[in-house]
Structures are given as structure tokens and as C-alpha cells.
Length: 563
Image (cartoon, rainbow, N blue to C red; front, side):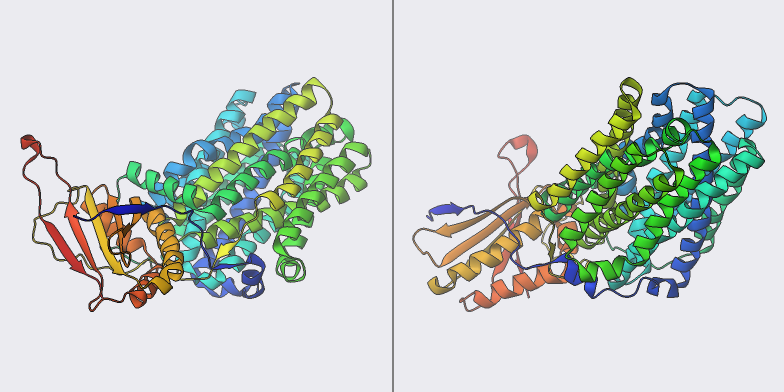
């Protein structure tokens, strides 16, 4: 009989590289536009963004004129972002399980429908504060469906090396329209009224919907059937919770969203109360914010080359804090516009950095879910911040609310030193082609639990190297779905080591093998190289059964030889 002692050591990925190294090797910002599908959807998205910004200006100003409540004005931002907090996680699981293109079509249809209903309500004189919030919530549901699927599709449409440039380009495109859209919205409001703004938004939101319908792109098919949505959500949350880089990014993004949204949520009040202006002034302020964001986005790659990534993110948060402070102290439209340009620059640099981190830290099988979880938490931060800063402005003063938001942004700047983000060594985000092993039993997809055991013979001098590779392997397997991973050493024969883990079902075991990247498979090859036995280590697969007669007899063990 063998006696074992369990080895449980902290799991850390040994091979790391700084994110600024990835950024420095990235293609130019405009390179992704060479891809026809990306260029078509990206261009149409800018048209839709322009309509969305015109509509945002219109509903924010209409809300500010039909109600005296500062809280209701600030809740427009909360109503738009709250659906992302509530729905994006299931939407991400749907995007990873089914066609991301179809999910985008459904989400964009909801956005267009919300704009059309708002225009109809304006025609019949039915616009009210709660109707505005309700339709803003409906549009937010559309964005909650579309955004994770669109951002996850970037890796399907483009090569991995183009992802940082594509994410930057998407942010630049939005902020280019941000520099024009608010001014255009203010002009339409002043000259033609809210109805024209709503009609313009309805037409603009049809452009991205048409582009996605027209374009199709190749997605690597899976030989496995789609996951059940609850299982997909669980696996995505498990992967995110075990990923140190994604977890740190989410916490920091949520804090930044909570503090930085003060600049946009309180902007109508700044234009109306502090600067005593109308919709044109509001549009000018919004345009200043967008101009700063666009300028920073175009120079983003250069900035990442010149300044270490973490330091750049801290500087961006400080820029947003200074923007809040100066806007709170000035009564000049010109000064406020320049300050908001500084805040817009910090805004786009920070959000682009967070998005790139999540994209590059996620393999393709789970990227929709990690992005959706990231969006859910940052949207929760944005929604909470919109409510808090609006409540403080209503209960105390607009100036105090902006100053407290600036103090919170300084805390966010310091958080990078407490929760640094480093990306694992660059590898293939695609999974592995793993043929189903031959077994002597008729296993169904839900048969299980499945137990896997692999024995290694390791020389005493190679123990440290073996444990280092095993730490990396444990990290990869547990993120891919392995349960109860453990490493055991034979007390009577110390050269014998046994790796063991479980999966709930046979299909979960097959999915786990497909999710392992080529770099994960390389770790297994390095472990095989340390093995001193005459033959390659064998993986023994068994299905667990109880001795209860009602559950049937105990199943035999099936041995799988790894190449």
C-alpha cells in the first residue's frame, strides 16, 4: 500500500512580461483598418456613436429642463450604465456560447428601438423624467448585449497582435465623435429642438446594425456542443476569479469608473448652474472633453513607449482629478473646456489600458465572459458614482461633489501600486485540438464525475524545476475548469509524484483539454522531459461511483497515454 503526503504550494505564474513591452511591439493605430469587416463595422459604429451622443445631450438637457431635481439629471448616466452591471455577465456567456454576430444584431436592434420610441414619445408630447430613464435603460440593455460581443469579436476578426491597436482605435473613434457629437447635439437642440435630435439618433443607430448584418467573419468552430448558459457563466466567473491580472484590472476599473464619471454625470449641472449657459454651452464642454480624449487616443501608442504603463495610468487618473478640481473652481466656459480636455485625455488613456489588459489576459474561449464581467463591475462603479455625486451635488453643492470626486481619483491613481497588472508571457489565445480519448465505456456528455491521475518519476535534483512547472500547470488547469487539483509525493518512493484533479462530467473534461493553449501544452512537454521513467507518463481516467447499489457498480479505470 502506498502512503502519500499532499503538496500544496501557492500558485504563481513564473513567466511574466510588462505590459509596456507588449504595447511597444504593437502595430500602428490605423493598421486594423486594413481588414474590410473591421473597417466597415468600426466606421458604422462611429455613425451610431454620433447619434448616441446627440441623443445623450438631448435627453440630459430635456431632463434638466423638465425637472428641478439634480439627482434625476445625474441618474440619466446611471440608467444607461446600470443594465451593463445587471446583464453583461449573462450576455458574455451567450456571446461565448453562441454566435457573437447574432448577439450584436440583437443588442443593436434594442438601441435603435429605444431611440425610435423616444422620438415617438416626443412627437406625441409624452416625454417625462421616468420615460427618459426607462428608455435610457432600454438602450443600456442593448449596449450590455452588444459591447462584450463586439469587443470579443475583435479577436475573431483580427490577429492577436492587432488587438491593442484595435482597442485604441475603437476608443479614438468614439472620442472623435465625442468631440463633434455634443456640439452637434447642442446645435440641433438650439435650432431644431429635441425631436430632431431624437430622429437623428434613430437614423444613426441603424448604421451599425446594417454593417453587422452585411458583414460576416470566420470564427474557429468547436467540435464540442455549446455549453449550458449557467455552466458557461460559472466557468467564466471561475476563470476571472483565478486570473490575478483580470481581477486587479476589474477592481481598479470599478474604482476609476466610480470617481471619474463625476465629470460627465455632473456636466449638465456645470453648464446650467455654474456657467449659467444653455445647450450650446453644454455641447461645447462635451466637445472639449471629446477633443482631449481624441488627442490622447491618437498619441496613445507613443505615450506608452515613452512612459511605463503603470505610471501612465496613474498620471491619467491625476489628470482627471485636476480636471474635476479646476472645473469646480472656474466660472469661465473657456477654462472649463480646457480642463475637461485634460480630463478627457486621462479618461481615454485609462479605459484603453484596462480594456487591452483584459483582452490580452483572456483566451478566446472565455474572452466574451471576462470582458462582460469587467464591464459589469465597471458599469456598477459608474452607476454608483453617478448616484453618489448627484446626491452630493443636490444635498450640499456642485463644487463640493467635484472636489470629493477629485480626491477619490487620487486614491485610484495610488491603487496601481497596490494592485499592479502584469501580463503572462505572450502565447496563443486559441485552445488546443484535443481528440476525444478512446475509452472502453459508453460515456454520455453528463457522465461523471471524472477523476484524472498522472504519475511522474522525478530525480531528486529536478524537484525544484518540477514544482515550478507544476505551479504553472495547476494555474492553467484550474482556470480551465479542473477541480480539486492536488500534487502528491510517495513517501516510500520519493521520486514518484502523482498529479490528480477532477471534473464534474465527461464533457467538462473534454472542454478542459480544448481550453488549454499551446503554451499550456508546452508545460506538459517540459514535465515529460523531467520524467525519468522508461515510458511517457500515463493519465489514468476513471469515473467515480458510489458503492450504493442504486447507483450501479463501480466503473473500471481507463488509461490514456499522452504523446
